[in-house]
Length: 472
Image (cartoon, rainbow, N blue to C red; front, top):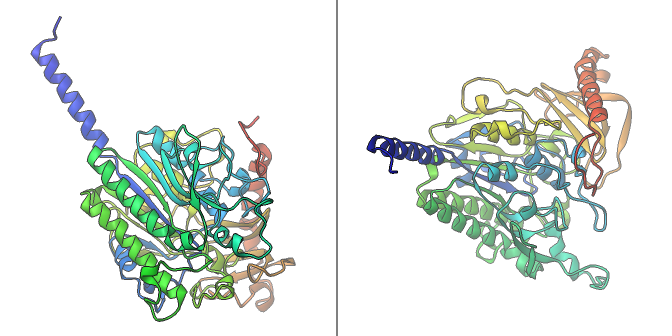
């Protein structure tokens, strides 16, 4: 029997409301730049112009105290899970042959958004798993295209000792959810120079496709620049008249602009959260690879160190009409925070797991301008398996130090303490220079370490390569 006209009308109203509700979920585009120094954008001191990135920052909120892990793999894990990488067995860049990759048990931001009805895609450098079961299409992405590991792979076959019998020739891969990933082409130096343009093109196509389908989407565009080998796209070679590194800085700025243009063309610019950050700082290896640049700004250290120069990168977010425009903040934020924050911003916070520690904190109220301060006042910096340093407010306590990517590790008999607000170069150690007057800071720092130790005893860390299923 047919329903009454009022019942049918009510049903239509319900369906219309449900459709409208689905359309109100914001899209999310996360652009990750590889080995991006804090000072590699002109708005933070670079002499190489980056007008598009500067403009994006002006349209949203820029973080001068955005903190990441000190290497590629840990940061990519932290962004995806909101958990300290050491909990996930992803605390360092693995050497070829070492067990690696996020355990399939981990619940990623891509899985959370996919479960919430989002179309999801990853293009670029993955670097948190190289085997089936640990690839992007196994961990929440509908489709992916790129490299399993570092851009450095493109140079492997150029070494005179390279033997394809003991190491497979590196490849660019593609995959779809529910299917095995497949090789597309050899990842050599020629392909390396072109890869980021492919990432941006695929990102743009995906944006326009999902906009036409009126479906919310999440895109993780993981650029492979600015990482050795430093090979700009032919269109940008010589563009800066200042060397390959500067050419690539201009290239990255242009590619960010192409993604923003795609959002505008698709008519979803105002409905899209855009996040732009680095994965770790620039390192001294840039000079070794012919790179005439790479700036970590006023901060000491770089890639693989525990100093501020190793853990601060550019960071910004734009969501027109929602996140304040033109805001610059030195409040502490972490790569760990994106997982719970994005879940809250899209109205899916109930999907955040409660059966495991989530080390990120929800920063949604701070980002939306509802409060003036961050919900975080400390950063724990691991280098591999060790807690190298803890930043608490504007004081930095170092238990171990290393001056560069290839430097020896020094264990200090007594921790070193620096005031990073007044001494960004971390050159004036306070215990020695001021007669231990800052010894009191060890109390909040030791409280942080104690709480972390208790948590890891209750929830044991997943070992690299371990197929972890649950906490007992």
